[in-house]
Length: 159
Image (cartoon, rainbow, N blue to C red; front, side, top):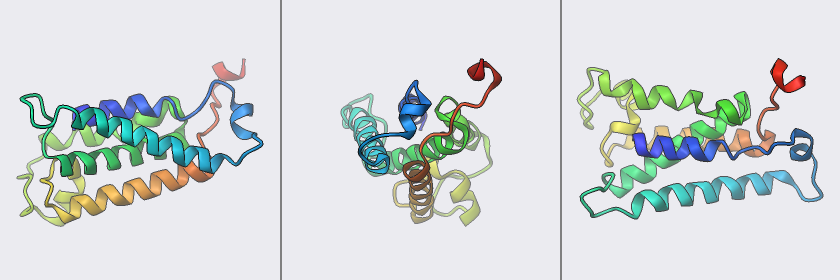
């Protein structure tokens, strides 16, 4: 999950441009561009991680990798929409760092709450982890596509 998370974090920094006024105006609608941007980011991240599948450096089951990529990009896009692209990684980091230390068996025999909290570490056949990642993707992508990245409102940016 760390490789997927770091790749998603790198993609999250691209979810806004250097000029917020330009990001809010355009001759063509932005939601279409934002949806295309997220789709391309998902394809790049997933493609890079799957490119080593079947080697000794593989990142695990391709189905679990796709699920983790979807959930990570959902959290990143939700972070960009609510916190701005510079802080888009805030929602993803707890799911990368905390679950390995929880007393959860990381099997489909875990409780539903255990599977939801540790969705990145669950096996590919975990339906609950798949649903969790899908919900995160839909919520995050919808929020980002409709609203865009939050404007930087810090005092340093205003100066």
